[in-house]
Image (cartoon, rainbow, N blue to C red):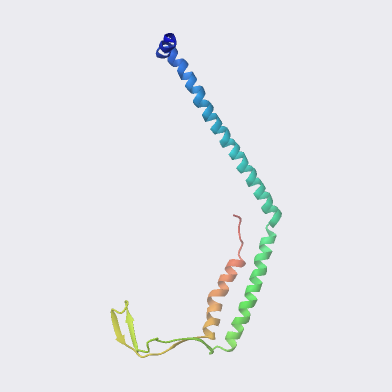
Length: 153
């Protein structure tokens, strides 16, 4: 027993102990590396399956996605066009009228810090406003979103 103890304190003993420790910790590191390699292979296989699924679902050239986007755009544009034409034919029909709830004829700014009297005139949102908004804002957004290329992600 004493010989084993002195063996570990000498130069040869420290080399032997180093080899033992290297073997123990090396096997732990190797098992972690092996586990990491298995996870990496599993992720690569899952990614390959996901790519194959997307190709099967959308086709090689993305024609399904492009056709769906165009059909949605046509439906949306026809619906908005019908509404806009009706709003253009009858532009003065009020939809919403905004007035001061309290009935007081005053304007306040900065949460009531500055208040001064003003003539109370109601604000009316009409169908003409809707037609103007559709032509200047909504239609360009629909065309920009649906008719421009989608790109690859």
